[in-house]
Amino acid sequence: MVNRLRDTIQDENVHIVDDTDQLITDCKQGKIDAVYITLAMLIEHLIKQIAEKLADSTASVYPAPDLFIFKGKYIVCPALAEG
Image 1 (cartoon, rainbow, N blue to C red):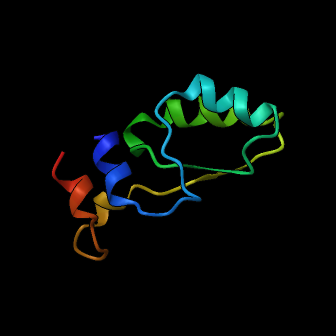
Image 2: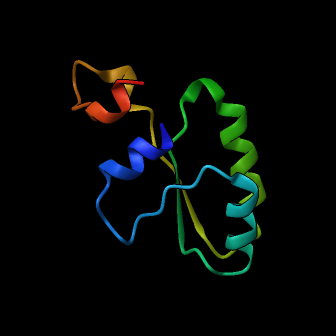
C-alpha cells in the first residue's frame, strides 16, 4: 500500500514513510520540518505513541483525521480505498 501511495502522490516535497523509528530519528536530527500522521483512528494508541516520541523534536506534528469514516461527505482517494 505504501508503494501505491508513493506512486499516487507526485510531489517531491512529500515523503511517505513507513519506518517510524527512522522518522523519529530524522525529526530529532532536524531533517524533517512537519509530520502528518495519517493512520486510522482505530489505532489511536499508535498515533499517540508516535506523537509523544516526536514531542522533543523540532518537527511540527499534525494528526490527520481518518476521512474514510466520512465516505458520504468527503472524497476518498481511490489508491487508498482499494487496499
